[in-house]
Amino acid sequence: MMKKPIAFIPGSYYVSLSTSGTYCELNCPYCMGKYLAGMDNVSNPEKLRKVMELHYARGARGFLISGGFNREGYIIISEEQLNVVKEFKRSHNDLIISIHAGLMPKKLLDKVWSVNVDFIDFEVPPSNRYLRYLKNLPGRDVSDYIEFIEYAIKYGKDFIVPHIVLHSRESTISDELDVVNKLSRFKLRLIVMLIEIWGTHDTGSSTFDIDRITTVLRYSKKFFKEVALGCMRPITFKIRHDELIVQEKLVDRIVNPRKDIIIRYNLPVIHACCSIKEEHFKLFPVEGYLG
Image 1 (cartoon, rainbow, N blue to C red):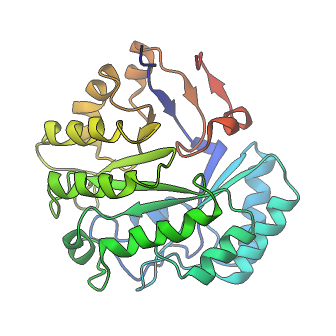
Image 2 (tube, rainbow, N blue to C red):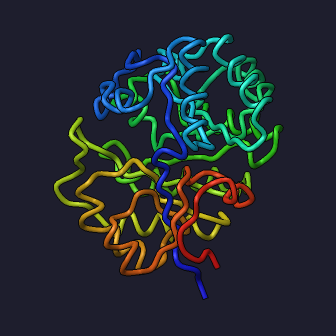
């Protein structure tokens, strides 16, 4: 019998930090810096150190290192900021740190590994059209992201958690299934699915092709130990379709579901990022029975 999904609500226990403040060189049309503005600004090493110390003292046990991307498609971060991460991780052994790496050079990825980042949240585009028109990266190709994973898994299959944006206006269901197929050969523990947001007001399509989305979710469960529905999805999708996803157990993890769904289906709640390994659940507050 399939277990009910686990709800993940990061809140103040798993804090998102922006290494570039609100600055980003890509300015993707669905964001335009809006989501960066909702993160703590750690745009220099001293800010990063102080903010991590503050949140840790308040009970945070996880940090997502995020930020704007450069024109090459990876996070804007300095070696000095990475050294702060290394020092902080060394002095706190009950802490998880993840990073929105993007398509960073191998040398920088090696540095990220060396500072003891636990894992990379890594968006894999659903199509080349998506890269060109929605990520402002016309010079990149889906194959670049697959090759990045091929390199990254030398550090272990738990080091990278792929994220795919579904229901994009610049991809088809065939594109999305093809990307799942390409990722399946790596035999990674978890894949995170996101639903495209249109514009900067957290909205999605006026109607959702829910069959398209559920088809990809069901297909992904054939290849991955766990499938998650991540934090990026429109409010309109949550209102209309979160219950179906939970009711039919189409995912194993779901981020920030509606409170009424948590109550109605008696979902266990972990106050952390949905990408963490099961062995790290104990670092974060848990509500309900995990089974």
